[in-house]
Amino acid sequence: MDIAGIRDQFPALNRVEGGRQAIYLDGPAGTQVPNSVIDATAAIMRAGYSNLGGPYDASRLSEATLEAARSAMADLYNASPEEIVFGQNMTSHTFAMSRALAATWDPGDEIVLTRLDHDANVEPWLRVAGEREVTVRWADFHDYALTPEAIGAELGPKTRLVAVGAASNALGTVVDIAAVSRLVRQTDALLYVDAVHYAPHRLIDVRAWDVDFLVASSYKFFGPHIGILYGKAHHLANLPAYKVRPAPDSGPDRWETGTQSFESLAGVTAAVDYLATFGEGETRRQQLENGYGEIAEYEAGLAERFLAGVAELGHVTVHGLGGSGRVSTFSVEVAGLTDSEVAAKLGKQGIYVSNGTYYAVEVMQQLGKAGLVRIGFLHYNTVEEVDAVLSALDGLA
Ligand SMILES: Cc1ncc(COP(=O)(O)O)c(C=O)c1O
Image 1: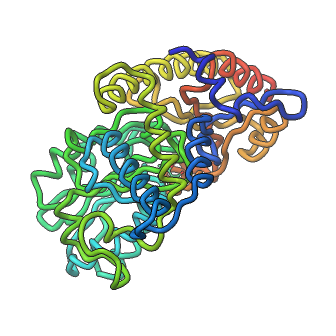
Image 2 (image 1 turned 120 degrees about the horizontal axis):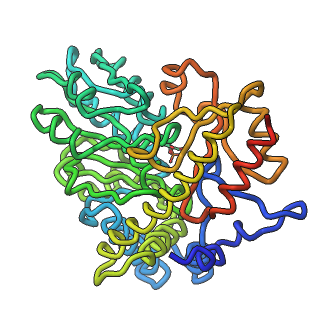
């Protein structure tokens, strides 16, 4: 992977602010976007587009844009286009799907949530569980790892749903979703996977994993702000969707409320195409499979360098796993400083990080922390940036 070439494609990464180039770590704004995504988003708006269903070119452009985006996301998830639902973001998708699924639950049923998850995969389920008198069982992480067995131990004949994240946005921990799925399949429960934090780092495969639902957000994988839900076709067809009466009542459309953000859909396709440029292959899916291998290897190098460097800094503690079983996202604590003080001091040096809970409420409660500082490296970060972050952390002693 020619990282210099990649960075040329990202205007934000090359912008000089206050006399220096900022370092964008995986943070509150999600990821930055390449020119191809910006161009695709602008192009449809320039071309003239309209709502679906009109007998004119502007409408046909929107229809073609929607179709292309479904096909791109089907490649990214390894799904069929008719299993792809677009919506506002992951959180909104999950609130909508939690209401629909809960309509099929009875009092005394059980669901399994995890302490490692972002609140967007927790609170929607807690809400409907409370409303339906459904029991919530919790799978805990231990030593920063969440094992399939910890989830399996909570399963039983009454379990209706397991909601779990594929990668923690706080600790970087990766969960073996295929192994979780094998345990869930021994019951009647459905499996709902939050892949928001996983998507920029690792290849998603809903078929190999055999999940019922999976959601990610395109702004985390170098696209615009739009959430994309995968659902097995029969679930999308049969579950009760909250929709207005004239809207289509078949296919993924029945879950897509109101008018779609066609400009974002154009950007989603461009983002998937961008990711596909990292790998060789005859199909876009093959390119993605190979491309994610390149991304994972490159990020592992950055992570190794960061972990080795930070181990030398006595005043910095990393909360998370060592080398394996994780993506390159680290939660750190600096002795003598609060998380917001650290973020502010790094921000002054042009290093953009998140701090607080990053909505991983349960994680922070388990760790007994009010907040931490997230330092996350993506494929567009460089070895020099890792060194600059280490040196800035050193300076906080
Ligand atoms: C792991 C994880 N899940 C869910 C979300 C929520 O995603 P969205 O902003 O698309 O609702 C985030 C956002 O940061 C996240 O990191």
